Length: 294
Image (tube, rainbow, N blue to C red; front, side, top):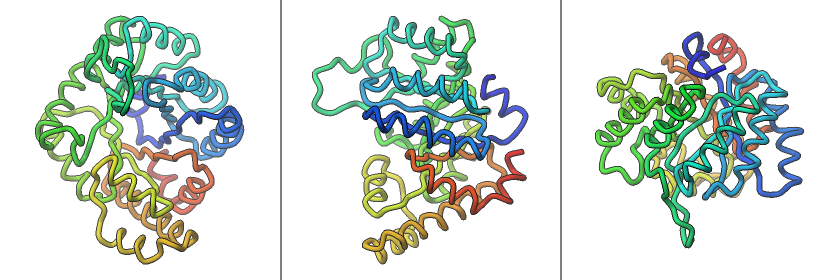
């Protein structure tokens, strides 16, 4: 089923996972993590792959595992970076053979210090979405990414939302947002996007933070704003692992509950393959979440 069809009927719960590079970790992901996440009956599970598509074969295999063994729809990532039309045709044909019907089209991060050509036949996510939609006659549901605090390379939020409109026009049927820690930032972005003509569902992306270094890394990668209270909590307890995890659990629980109270289109959680923590989080908000996602 296309995820857009699910979104037309209900609020969605979804998780993102990534294929590990090591074979033993891939087994753990399949045998334990996906099973543990599936307990919470997500509507879809998003599967990433690394720079230059270097875990793409695992992405397709894991997407197939999700399709065959859970009640969730897999959402396979595909990027413009290092992709040719032949490669995209091959990947989409493989996904189709597995019954995977949903693809998240992205430009992709540009790797540093590589001699591999970065762009070939596709430069923008909208180019990739438009090609897949035409080549496969609308057989895939297409999704895109959006950035509540603008893409790091965008001049400003207004121009970034204009590109988002181009993505929608190219066939993207919903958007998963980049992580953010300040819900007011997301609400401002959502209002601005709707005024600009974005009519498809926009799912807020939530990243539970469980250690001090992770918080700093997310700031560097995304440029996201961190509320002063969260920063103060993490600075105060940065050497206490248990305290940081508890603070992350409480903060993320509140963030999701506030989004639910404001009737967003769904919740997308970047699990970082940490299913034990996600289980604590989901159990913490279980009663409210059960009513929202049904």
